[in-house]
Length: 159
Image (cartoon, rainbow, N blue to C red; front, side, top):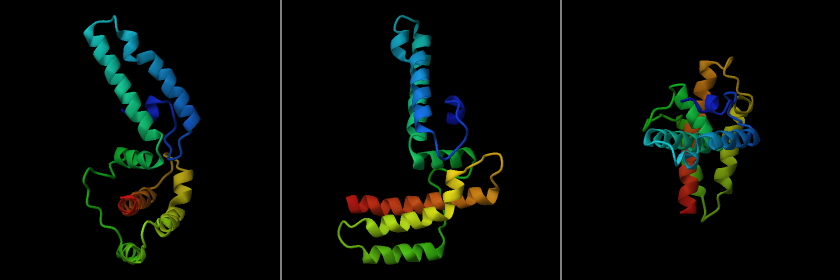
């Protein structure tokens, strides 16, 4: 099931949160299990499945990072437990950043995260499924894994 189609939204990395919420509640009203309490077991099960799928799709499309991951998975570019080789220069910068981290100061990591975002910002903010190239999708994939790597550092700082 494609979540963009489910919510009647264009494939994008910048999802209209207001429209997503509006469509989520409209779809949820039609399939919420409470409305099927007097229906047979099959109809109740189907309503539960639809609601679970709506909730999952809403959660993914409501989160920028999860939307990127979802879209890359839909394109067959990200596999579960994939060991993606990041560029050596990035890893060296991260190693230096790690060595210079002091205490709970997340600012250097967040600044570096903004720097790597800048390189893909036009792709992220103006994603067009009909014209995006394989090369651009691979740039988004690399960004995804870099961001994921930096997120692990931030999570460790938050401890």
